[in-house]
Image 1 (cartoon, rainbow, N blue to C red):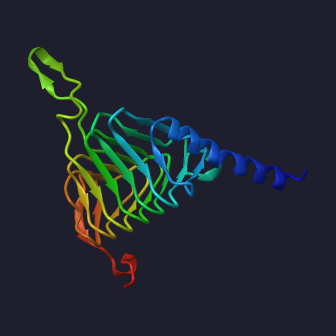
Image 2 (tube, rainbow, N blue to C red):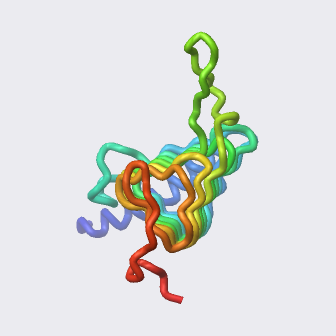
Image 3 (tube, rainbow, N blue to C red):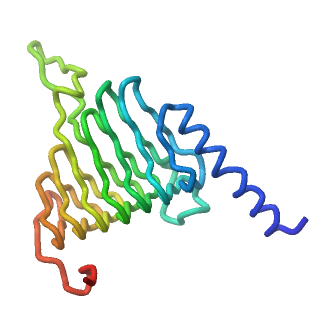
Length: 201
């Protein structure tokens, strides 16, 4: 057997295997989803984690040279939470966590080591303590169609990205980004997008 044949065989086995694994973790996974390497998937009872048609998830280093030791992590962490990844979204070693709602529109690209979360996870309590009330500390995140989110960007709770928005690598996004605008820096500032980056039509 040639090396190319071995690789083809491994790929033919791993995609259905990881889809099966995600379904066993209560995710709803379209048969066309591609998983290069095993992501971490957690869907709480009473929550929804949905991977639509053509979603591509890169976790193995062989699938993306920018991936370090991180693994793609998808989590719908509380009853009633909804994490929905739209048609033909691509991601590499991203961490996406929904305590209430995270929605990602079709054809969006999510770069290596991106963090998207709709919660602060903790809230302060008397006596210098912290709660584990992720749901109470959450606000929905909505990402539009055809967005581009650069490597190691962070998108925090309550943020909406309009269609075609671009988030620069390493940006910290704490407020809405209109359609066809750029978020850059920490904390991110919002600028009109260079016309060369705007989707035609």
